[in-house]
Length: 404
Length: 92
Image (spheres, each protein chain N blue to C red):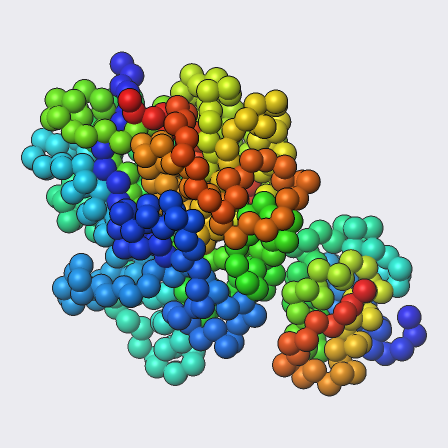
């Protein structure tokens, strides 16, 4: 039997704040968290700005011994899961611990720890590696920490599909609950990317904006990198109702596809197919969709390709739906992006307010959608999509329904 | 394509793309040579390394042919930009 799947818990930490209240206040105000980079020496970089988690003190969340074992990315994953579980009011019994899944996404895991190790080895000529490097670096470190923290012993794993990672993770978590494999699933992801080696690699790609992120705006100059973590507690409707949980929204569909095209250039047909499959999976008609949280990176290629994909899928209805990119405010958190944006989409449906595309200056004929420029909009929307399209052409789209 | 600098630039492009240097003409566009956007930034990376120059992002966007690359790199090399150029190179 298929179960309906509802979201009962949300957690997020990113450039817009350390919890969902700060996050939502910023999104609603259209306030960007993009600022000069502090986590690495920006004087060595062509680009200067990023969406970093500011004023972050891990000791507020973990003791020193735990911090020794957790890269910043795993800390973000655990912190967002902790907030989501508390929000859901979940109390883990031995039975529930076996009936709960964890699926996380991360693009590059503990690359900051890896970077430090390489600096020590190659630059400082320290022949000894740090024995904690491996457990800190592994992409599943966040999922493992979450399982340990709550004693969750059900299925737990990590997905890595670049910028789609946490949408793929949420989609798998959703389907496990829908199929009855588990009663509860924590789906999300985390990323921490502000180390010199990784930033230099992005610099070489020549896709990072020298100022800020202006998705869909004619004067857009590229993406802005971000970091953070986000988590959704999903559970079967029966489970939520039995325990009297507050419901934020319903996840109704998930679609994924591959472009089979180019390692970095997106293809609108692949993105379109993922959107169509997500709607078909949730029995959603295109005319019912009122909002899309776009992948919207702010690169020339993504935003025009995504616009073409939306037009192909929605036809005339594309002129009646709102599309915004919250990356304009929190930056592109790569493997955490899908999860952060899923939280934004759930809150948009629940609160009846669509977050804007910030930093928007000028219409681009190649991006001729209603992008909710600069100011949030009050709107009761029934269905929304949250898009993630990765380098490598791997696409993942979630369909979400407002809970009434 | 007679002078030494031009020949070095052309060789870097050919080597990076794993194509015979004879297939490159000064007026070949990157599109004609099947150099896509990702190949293009890889070519620029190789040119930066070969000549120890920095090609700014804005200038990089304008490099779409062998001639663009030759002119842009020549300007940076002759400008003595030994790795610290921050001004757009107006490559066209």
